[in-house]
Length: 111
Length: 113
Picture 1 (cartoon, each protein chain N blue to C red):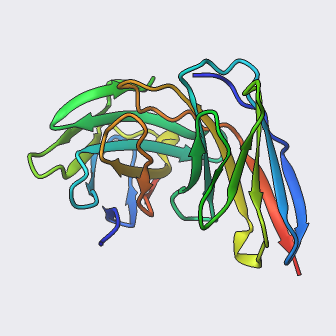
Picture 2: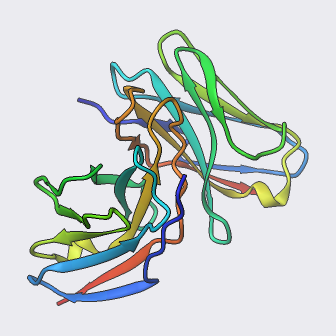
């Protein structure tokens, strides 16, 4: 699976949009970009995933660049409960369901 | 719909003992994966089971083993515990198809003394 690079930490004001970047310059054509987050002492929570097109769900939006070498997770209106470690993961298709977690980005939402 | 259930939530063992952790996946999910999380190494993949067969395996010693039952429930076993095995052990379930997302449980916090 391709390696990802994320900033170690980011801050965001409550109510503002949080934009979390991820670099995955070695991504292959059949690899998906997944985002998970982990609130302290809980299991990771799925947020969103995509292959080529931008995606949106009730939690967030995922913007993938045209060359697929980077992506941005957008939380449109961050709340204090969004404070968590956010993981960007690239996973191949087929029968390999292993997720390789990096260090992730600690997002702190401030009041 | 009930989520992924892991038992026990906390466990304290001593070096040399063995331990068995349990995971009940979401109803209808046939894939169960196990991860170890430590402050130093982060989240690391242990193994994945699908329809009672181990389908993928991470880079852990043979002391770490698992199995899946016909009802998709899974157990993982760690034998001859070492201090370094102290970690949060997370179980995740999914339908097991290509694009599927994982649903994680809250984990079992294992402390080895």
